[in-house]
Amino acid sequence: MGLKHIPVMVEEVMAFLKCETGRTYVDATLGGGGHASEILKRTAPDGALIGMEWDEDALAEAKNVLMPFGDRVKIFRENFIHLSDLMKAESVDGILLDLGLSSIQLEKEGRGFSFKGDGPLDMRMDQRMNHTAAHLINHLSLEELEYTLSLYGEERWAKRIAKAIGQEREREPIRTTQTLRKIIHHAIPRRFYSWRIDPATRTFQALRIRVNDELENLRKLLETGWKILKKGGRMCILSFHSLEDRMVKETFRTLEKQEEMRVLTKKPVTPSEEERKKNPRSRSAKLRCAERI
Image 1 (cartoon, helix red, strand yellow):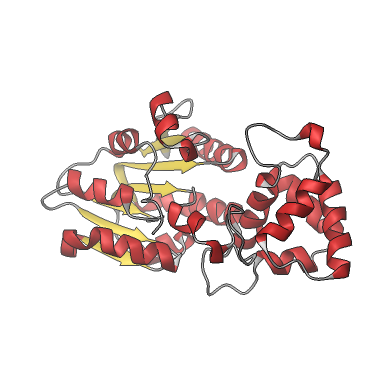
Image 2: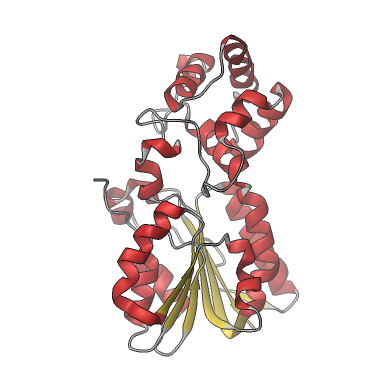
């Protein structure tokens, strides 16, 4: 059995969302249900939560965690880009988006998100999607592969890694996480290895973002999601990647200039040193929040 997923910056998120009884909130990335259960606890006895999750494994865990809250919670297996359509004309008091991977995803070798074990190069958040990471690795041109690693992974060795992948896939298709990890390790000169992260981390991150179209999904949500907020309603977004954080920051600033939203976090809120020690996966988290005017 895997470790229980630990939600990031719970107290900070709850404070910015202004959780109160009788209000309605959206958790558009349910994950293991950690943040959602806290929202429901703090809005008892009559607060409501709408939960969205497109990962079937995470959704099953969330349903189990949130079962005690009964009909105060409604759960949908949907990508958060469909939030506005799902809500139709209804409005809510708060929206939460947690863009990090959950332990449920990371610890299951068959999902291919992590290289700690060995499993198929899948990386799809939604198993109904067609293309896996293995498809990208074996079918993208070397130029496109280099571009993907450079843009989404900010990988300085993108060209060398892409070339090494190209040489290996000429011999046989690359199908597993450990095969890809070894290729990356050999492609990057050992003297440039980081003591902080595995050399394969950025490549795996880039492939996951590309497979799931994560940045485009976030852009779509930021364009329309805030419109379902009531006046005084808040949107809180936890990001774990500099490109995501930059997109959130710039969108919130633009909406503030247009007098649609008021930015509540001039600088991103980050986990305390104590939280980073207890939950190392929280170390790159950044929380930004804005309130509808």
